[in-house]
Length: 129
Image 1 (tube, rainbow, N blue to C red):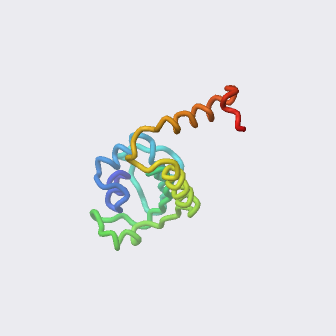
Image 2: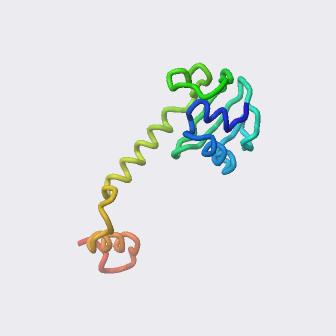
Image 3: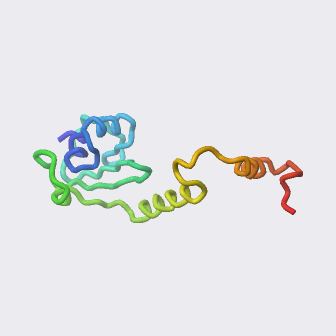
C-alpha cells in the first residue's frame, strides 16, 4: 500500500490529498529516509511523521483493506511516539496563551514600549529603576 494511502487509512490525515502533500513537503520518513507519496509500505516499517510540531513514530503492523474506524486503528499500527513530544507541545500552547489571548487584537502602547525596551537594551531610558 502507498504511504499516503496508509496514513489516510489509519486516520493520521483527514484526506488523502493532505497526506500526499505532507509526503511531498518531506514531513514523512520511512525507515529514516524521506519518501515520495507512492512509496510502498510493508509490515515492520517505521514511519516518522511530523504533524502539528510533533514527530510521530509509527510501526506498521498490518496493511488495512480500506480506511478503518478509530477503534480499529491499533490493529494496524503501534504508536512509538515519546511522551516528551506531547509535553513539549503542551508547554508551547501555555507559552502562547500566557501573554495574550487569541483574537484580542493589536498590541497596546504599553505592550509596544515593553517590547522596545526588551529588544533595545542600549537605550538608557529602558534601564530599570
